[in-house]
Length: 219
Image 1 (tube, helix red, strand yellow):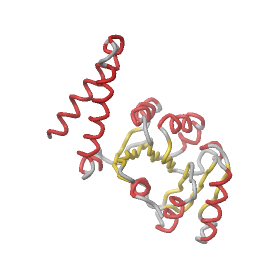
Image 2 (image 1 turned 45 degrees about the vertical axis):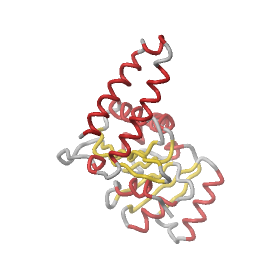
Image 3 (image 1 turned 30 degrees about the vertical axis):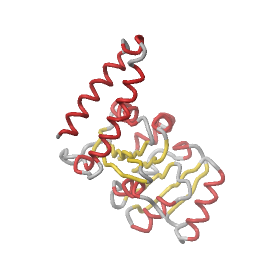
Image 4 (image 1 turned 120 degrees about the vertical axis):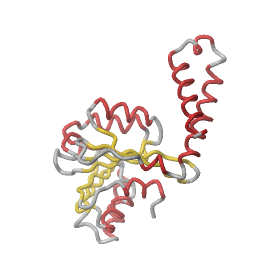
């Protein structure tokens, strides 16, 4: 029912959490969280009526209506501050995830954990978390349909000593870094054709990231 990407998101949810599953689609993450016992309460939100109805149907079929509440609405705006302690947002672009967080600061600030799986623009997520004083506590990688995804777990208050991120020991790390390096090399090649682009700050930042990635891959 769920792929390795969603399983990686699920693995970060702490036992006994009250979870918001934002953009729940057909409700599969919510159902797995409830059936595993990781979450004691789940609010699944969907802004589109089709997936909303599908999620309600699937949750009812699993006999989980007493654990999972499905709400129709945009992002976190259908939640009140303090209703959940864990917010999961998976399968959306980084810019959209950032917007969802920015649109409901009181709900975000009342949570203790954010589990985010952007489809792109991961740096934008990391930068925004730093700006609103959230600490990235762990990260992991997951592969689904040949694509490697990044999963971020952030906390408001660090309650345990820092540790090595899961992604650092992931068997997918070298493949992920290699794919990222290839993408940046294509970007540099395209930028090199323009004297204006070659003088841009982004050009030099990309070169620096390429050098860093090459060093990491060499190990």
